[in-house]
Length: 318
View 1 (cartoon, rainbow, N blue to C red):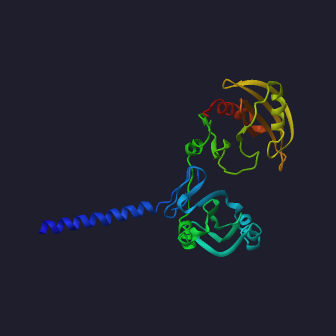
View 2: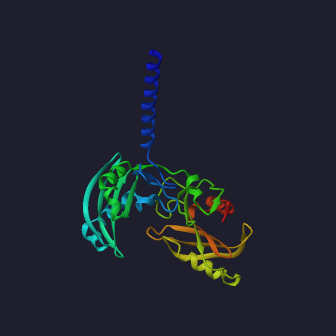
View 3: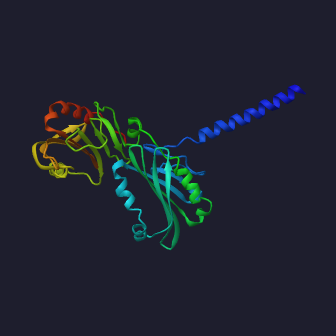
């Protein structure tokens, strides 16, 4: 009998310990792939494979997450004023300040009627760590009875911020970047766009740190005789640069594909700093890949070989 009693105590303690461990793991925030922010999602929600956030198909509900620089908070918060939300069709029913572990947020929720169907939507904008997070919670009105504001707010209170590893950022791209040449990945998106920089800042003036922008444009095939005109049009729209003058433009092969290189000079829009630009375009049958880099003129000679290494290390996978 003493043995049975002891055994029961051990089993009981094991269940308590298992429950404690399960609770601890359940309390860890979940970060969708490539997301800087994560939460402990409400029951029934899982990380989405279709968008940045979580979804619950049974409840016809979704949680969408966007991150921006910390300094964007004031402007974003203004968009949550009752009158501004009303113009977008949302009748505000609840507004609450949400305390966070490292910051604070504002939660606003209400109903929206769209195409004859009623929905319940909530938005929280939060300043936490070094980011502004905008989280939108959307559901059919019937789901609000069980997915209440209190449940949603409890989930949003667990908001956490992390640094996304470069490997994870690159994993969502429809191509491989095998060589970074000391650059780091600022952000990427599933549409193939990527921003790289060589320096410590996430967001910096155009001329302060070397910048690389990669993008994919779908559509029709560009004929050989139209490629130079196409490339010249692209580079003249380079962001943050004015007075662009092309110094070299020529066709070339890039990774066994038809390509085009343009080197140009210009001035940074706000500070008049001299910059040099290089643009490479790969032409495919169903679209094009563009790689544009903007570098302070004084850093051009040391940076250009690194840019070529990044260019040559991009492998198309789809």
